[in-house]
Length: 454
View 1 (cartoon, rainbow, N blue to C red):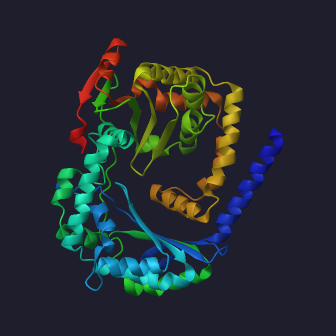
View 2 (cartoon, one colour):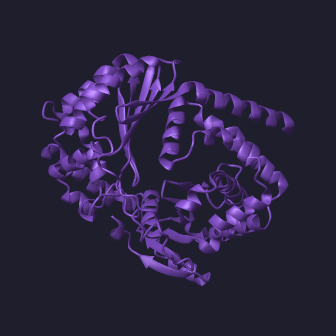
């Protein structure tokens, strides 16, 4: 049976490589790079505009300006108000969204091919003529500030926000791309317009999925969006992360009112080299430990001990840095036990990985890898991510072959490198009463206020 599975994987890799060669085309429209994924199965399209900058170049007083700029594009232009813009896009059933990270941003558009022309024309108009009316911006700022203030009741999101900033403190990537209460209040229409002008000049790349007819948008991109002019005139400042020594001997306790559960976050910052030098083994280590119901942490912490409903591990990289970590929650009274079981699980897999568990996880990861790109839209976004990291497209279909070369010993080494409990920054968000429980178990505790992270 195992030999049959190997044969299937080999055939799948060959077919996938052939698909990339046949259906992925790259063009130059002026100075603009374009990637087209041919897909004639349905009369639909996806367009993703990649901007080679994100929140990294924001000033400390303007945190959140990039995300606000993209989100407020539909608030009004010199020709249309917000209601008219949204009515036009919704009339065609158009989906549109923006995503901002520290290193890059994207603007996505999707719908029916027959409606592509009016949809894209409107989007081009927004990027050229958005005025960010003060009345609409004021309402959006009020909603954003209220959302941040209400995070105290959303312990999972609050824990993620605090942990990110604490673990990345001392790097250019620590502050949230959504901004803070203080910086959001200072945003103005003028600042958003200035940010839009900047982003119209940064380096871009366009990813298109759909039948061949979608390429007819070339003239519109060139003439209406003007994205082929001055492409790359503004260069993003590349800042490779340099990890700062973090306190791995203490537990950071963030106390919040009315908490009957403890949110647990632990992890570390990865340098660009750590995050990109060994992508396959890094992915294997995270999925083996916490990538599904059969993962080691899920089996030990949930199935055997019943300490949580869900627990997961991750390890991923951008272009210049990466992050790894473990995330879960438990009842207040089982906090220490949960921490101990997590540590014991990591330690045991550093020492020895049983062959049967290793082989089961290997087959699972192989079987689910290509399924994760079954949708051509997901596949296109994978191409974007590879381009951002400067990796070849061949990495996609080389994955299953490379993962087969990993041994139990090398996987244990990667788990030790990334997840060794001694190297993790640990954060617990929950009741203030947890401090006594942690100290009794021998942990040093540092208390911090959640308010400084809003």
